[in-house]
Length: 404
Image (cartoon, rainbow, N blue to C red):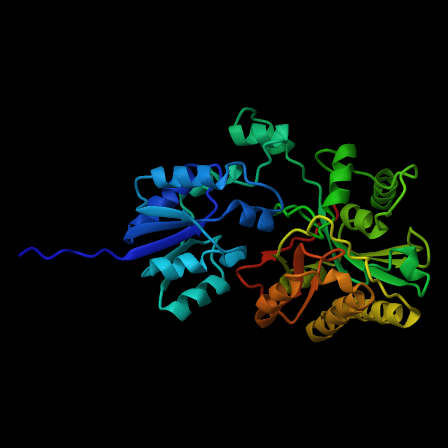
C-alpha cells in the first residue's frame, strides 16, 4: 500500500498591490517549503497603515494571488494592523510562517513562537531588488508616480519628490501663541530624508510638505534654509483664510536641515533658531529614535477639543524640552528618554484629545521595546516616535538630513 506524503503548511502575508515579478518570485521561493497559503491585507488595513487606498482592491489582489500557480489558497485577512493575519494563522495552523528580510519583525516572531509555528526569514532575491522602483507605494492619481509605476518615462526616478519630512521631538505645541503666551520655550525638530513613504494625516507634517510641493515639486532649492521655512510658512497660512494656523515648527522642521530647536514667545514665528550638525550627535540620535506607524488621524478628529492650558502645564512642557535638548547634546540616553517622555505627557495634559481610541493599544504594543514614546505631530493617530536602546525590526529608522 502506497503511503501518502503530507506536505508542511506554509503561510505568508502581505498586500501584493500591483502584483509584480518580485511578488511572484517570493511566492515561488516560499512554496518550496510546502503547501503555500497567503493572507492578503484588506483595503481597510492598507489605508490604516499607509494612509491611502491601494491601487488594486482587495478582491482584485485576491484574484491575482490565487491565480499564481505556486499558491494553494489565499484569503483576505480579517484583522487589522501589522498583525492582521492572526485569526487566519490560527485557522490554517501552518507549520511555517515565512517573511522576507523587509517584512519580518519581533511581533510576528512572538506570534509564531506562542503557537509553535516555525518562523523563517528569507532574503531579497534578484527579482525583488529589480522591482524596488515599482513598489506598491505609488499614487495612481499622481502623473509622475504613475509614469514611474508604468515605466513610461526614464525620468521618473529623477522626478520623484525628495522633499524632507520632519519629526518633532519635544516641546511642540509651544509654536502656537495660545500656548506660548502662558510661558516661552523651545520646540525641537529634525528634518529627515524621505527614505519611506509616510502616511498622510500621520504627524509627519505631510500637509505642510504637500504645500511645499506646490512651490518646489521635487526638491528644496539651494537657498537660505530659514528663509525657505519663512516662505513655506507664509504660503501655507494664507492670511485671507480664517481658522487654524499651521505652526511654524512644521515649516522649520522640513526646510532647516539637521537637528533644530526654535524659541517661541507668544508669536507665530520663533525669536531664534539653533541648529546642530555635529555628526556624532546626529548619528547617535539616529541610533536611538525610530518611527512606528499606527493609523491615520481619523476624519473629524479634533485634538484641541477639551484643551486645558495654564502656566503650570506649559512650564512642564518647556522644562522637558530644555532638558531633552541638553541630554541630546551630551548623548545621555537615560536623561533623553526621561525628558522625551515628560514632554509627551505635558502635551497630553494640555490636549487630552490627542489620545484618541486605539492609540493606547499601540503604545502598549511598543512598550516592551521602548524607553519612551510619543505621538508625532498633534496626535490623534498617525505615527509613534520611540526612544530605544536598539531599533527593533518592526520600526522605521530615520535619516536626519545633513547640510549640503
